[in-house]
Image 1 (cartoon, rainbow, N blue to C red):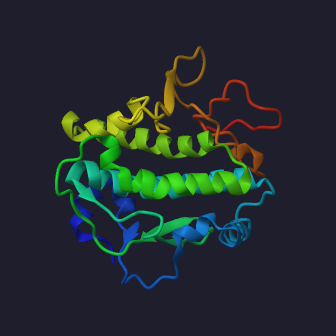
Image 2 (cartoon, rainbow, N blue to C red):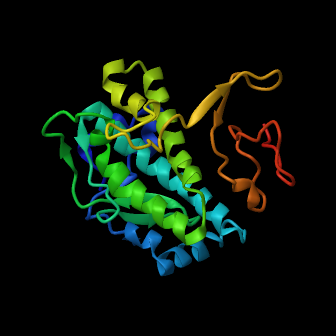
Image 3 (cartoon, rainbow, N blue to C red):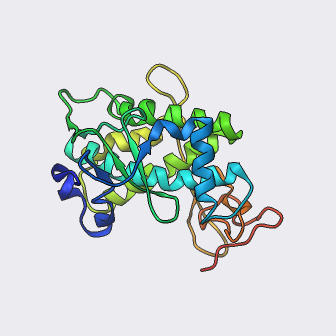
Length: 251
């Protein structure tokens, strides 16, 4: 079953995320998220994904798959955290992945409903520690080592959706102070300890002479165009100078 405490978040444009996080009583087949970074687990995943998305470029396959993983996990987790002050158990060792018909993440099974923060988080990295340090960091490091895919690409795949979500929630009229840690997560170049923030500035808004302007443009290309039948994203940094062989998106 889905998490009742989070139900008020999933209305309107976000209704499709209502059942993304489920509890242990969900009967669907799942596998531990930790398997995503084992040699055998990743091989099984890519073999299944290739049935629906042809391609031999393992870097592009992982990058494309990761985009659905990140957006599905980020929307309910970040929204619950910011709007309800509710932390969810989404660390890589506590999460199970349920795949859909196309070999992509459909839902995530978590061990319990989570709970409100006992004390107000000190900063965005404290607030999102479970998601960033418990999930994204080991996952991105593992994928990067397995398929030699740039960490910058993978972090941009994740941060892109955080930026989009925070802007979308601001557009709904949510108070700025409620969203402040979400804003800071993508605006602070450094963490409080001085280390680099890999979520920093994932997109830019570019004025253009032709086409949509300003264009919301990712900092890093997700390289999906290296897979058969997939064109550049509409917010690709190469949109005005496509790489050789890349196709432009169809409007």
